[in-house]
Length: 412
Image 1 (tube, helix red, strand yellow):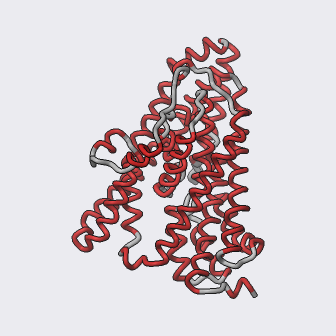
Image 2 (spheres, rainbow, N blue to C red):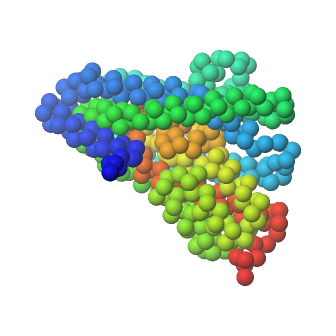
Image 3 (cartoon, rainbow, N blue to C red):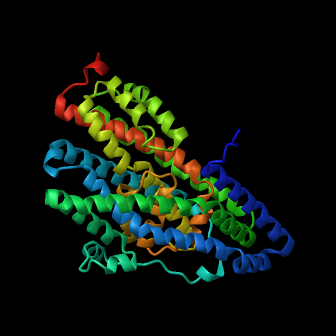
């Protein structure tokens, strides 16, 4: 009989634990200063290789996954009213999720640590005028954004070309097929990179604990708590109000009906894998099959409220780690970038971490410290996936009410 292989989440957790143990041994045996210098010279570089690979895959992943997502929607005219209402709902709830994430993170910020790592001691985050930021979202060159990893501009390029392929019709199909094929290859390459993530986590965690001591561990629990508080606030506030106001449904009834999908998403950490269960939940609520069959798969691709909250909390946490206080303009940039990045987040486990690198880059936070929280990413992922799926189902319910009327099976 074949031995059952450990999943990626388990291997990352092992890498995290081993990194903590080895880092603590160095810290005790050599002292913080010597241990930090030694691990920075001989162990951290291997973690840097992992971070470089993350940065390498971000550009093709964002460009191709968004283009492929737009292409998969089919004819723009056919999408019609249901399409734009669905997308607007997702964008608005995701933007609200970003704001909630930033508010919660700023409340917790005072308890987040400042890491005394020499190479980042004089680091300053990027600042920009708000109007300049808006203008710079739109590229004046198709190549420079790809070379410079200007992610907001890359997203705009992807949206324009994706829509252009749809409008081109038959003549655009060969290019669309090529994009879909290239995107599939990119997903596989991303899988290769994620496969070595336990090693990257081990190396970065060893370096951090050796230089900072075990005090950093309490901070990881704190940032995890902040993220889950954001998840809960979003579910209770945003989804309860949306189903009550727009779908005329009792929030208690909604949460009772959606619980099977949320529980499955929490354990599987996959919105795509949860689609059959979510579809069954919407059927039980009385949502027309034509609507749920459109909204749910689209939501699994572009609706990432939980991911947005996580990215905002993580960005504030990592900024504090290097002693940077983000400005209001930078926080607005995080909201815009995280909202758009959540649309481009692939359905592959661990892709949210790669999108976090993009959000950090938008405000000039070096992604080196991703390894600090990557080890517990599975714990973040469970909550954010459940939140994403609840959002998909709530959108289905609201769109049904807007298009087809009362959800009679629910309101009996």
